Image 1: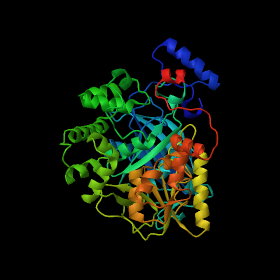
Image 2 (image 1 turned 45 degrees about the horizontal axis):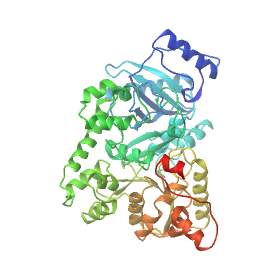
Image 3 (image 1 turned 30 degrees about the vertical axis):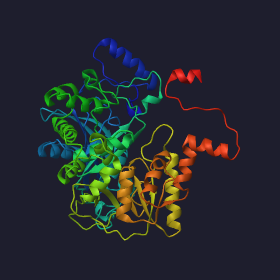
Image 4 (image 1 turned 180 degrees about the vertical axis):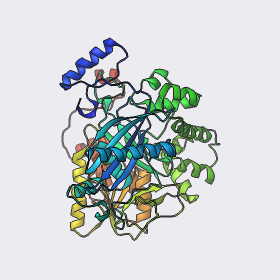
Length: 523
């Protein structure tokens, strides 16, 4: 009991398994809780705030794509919930408000439920009478400044008297209304450890998380998969092979096993039986794979039509992803897309679904829109963040990006931040003049650059990820501030660097680029 991240927890199917789990649990805590297993039920969370005068609102409700049995920090989470009926949503919302009132909590509270997918039976599985990991995600997902509001509430201020600093117009008493979909996916770095178990469960193993925003689940889901790993193109059916055991006992790569299984012809009912992921999500994932097949079967000698390209972009396909399917190049797809006038629209996260006036700087790109929510006056300086936390690259680069933003502000420069990590300070609404919660890729950064016409882009504050796209941006005449992309490439490309050392007469160790172990041993 009372261990963070589900440390030492698990599911026991026999007395022997229970003994083993109990030994593990007592290694981390002096108290043990044994509960009925609700494995396979839906997991739903509500964030609630209450003031000292008993005013109470729910800020966000989130649904785990993965069923109960996988820690909420290890799960794919979607906000707002997508598969609850109106009755279920309001039943859980009313219970959440009753709970916070019963405990007399003043401030913020996180409530987690297990909901039977076949009946309306539910259990409260956890109540956090404090800000939690989920609160940080809810705050970034809704644009509602939870920590700021909770601090004011603790000082005795009433909810209607607190000004919502994100919208600039409404009070904290407005319950957020979302006209978009947010998907959070964790990042695991299990490949960096030997003999590690890759199965995921009730104990946390992930080292970071990403948050993607779109107007459709498919769009946000594919964005999030690319954010987690820049080498992945999206919901790709060729990363893994179908495997019933990996579907039933999930690993960190379960989503790609799922993609391969859908392509291999598994039915939705069969996949639900194995994964217990709600059929609504499985149908949405099938939409993506079905369109993969449409793209694969198009005549690759001809250009893609306007409608085919637009539909692909609307369900989250990147230019690079389309190019890999139709055997073309990312740049060729980009040029073709622009010739067809298919460009992303810039939308605001205003917490009020455009029902009330709002002056928010919190932005995302979508192909499921017809007009921009903002004007583009120009004159900004773009700073690219570090993306998802991983082993070897985390908060130190965010500190660099935030320091850069602060210095630019001191110099009187208007700033744009591009990042997608909900755990960072750089994605706080008050750190920059404009915040794009978007992918750090050549395609997206170039799209923002084309819209905003900034004075330049600073890539050097975000670690390796922004450096990787420096030359691509440079070739498209984007203005890079600081070290020139040629110099960055000269330092990072081993062959160019070696040639430079030879040219200026500096000795270097003997080296060779090898592709297999045998040649490495011989070398």
